Length: 124
Image (cartoon, rainbow, N blue to C red; front, side):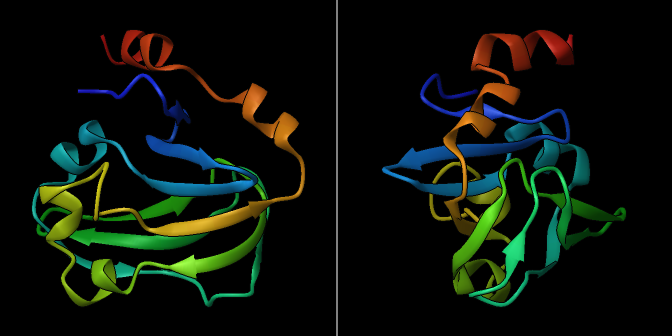
């Protein structure tokens, strides 16, 4: 349920690294807690985000929640599929339901995130 190759934040976002680009999305726990996602508000490409700072909002039939970036840097890509068809966040949270890609300013930020086993232990 929580892929081993990812890093996780306490705010229930995940990071998949590809070189110095971090793909960011919400975990299965987050999307299940939210229920059916109906709207995703994401920042503009080219904007900067700080680690653990708010970068957008996700709205479900139950609530509106803030999204917090597990890493800091420049946003190099925003997933238009998630804004055009927000249900993809529920259907494939670790695949096509990713939200943003961030070019990291410092890879040491990853040391402040959890591995899959640690993240899963925080949910129990």
